[in-house]
Length: 110
Image (cartoon, rainbow, N blue to C red):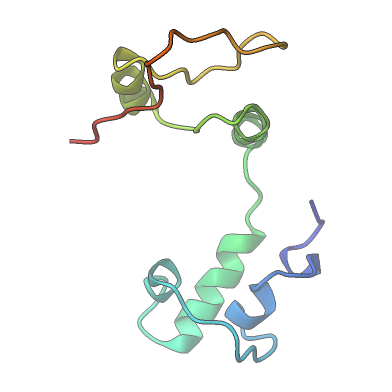
C-alpha cells in the first residue's frame, strides 16, 4: 500500500514509534508486550515494522484477503475443512446455490 509504514495517511506508526505525539492513540495489548518500558516498546516497534515480510507470505496474505478467506496454519485449516469451511479460492463466478434452511460458516473453536 505504501513504501514506508508512516507514509499511510491514517497510520498509527508515528505515534507508536514515538516520532510524534498522538492524543487519540491508545496502546493495545500487543504493543505493550513489545517491551517493559516506553523506550523499549518504541524501539522494538520500529524494528518490527522495518523488517520486510517474505514474498511468499505477502502473496498468501494478498490471495486470502482478495478472496475473502482466512489465512490459517495447516493444523487449523484441516480442522476447519473437516467442519465444512471453504478456505481456498474458488472458481470465479456465482456462488453455488444452497439448500433452503442451511447455514454456512459454523465453526467450533473448542
